[in-house]
Length: 76
Image (cartoon, rainbow, N blue to C red):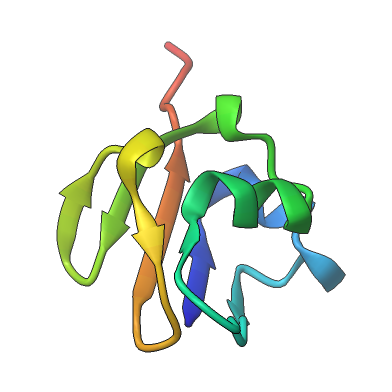
């Protein structure tokens, strides 16, 4: 699985690299995977799974998936 952490979410990934590969033994909830990596789910506002916007709470991922996560936009 390829995970792309957009914006400041890259600071939570190993080596602060926005793109990382994950090898999964089985299908897992995305929320659990993010927790294992150290990315707080509360910071994730947008999830794109294989090109489609999905709900973080209902998303399961597997090895062939491409996941992009983004924080909310803030500022003035």
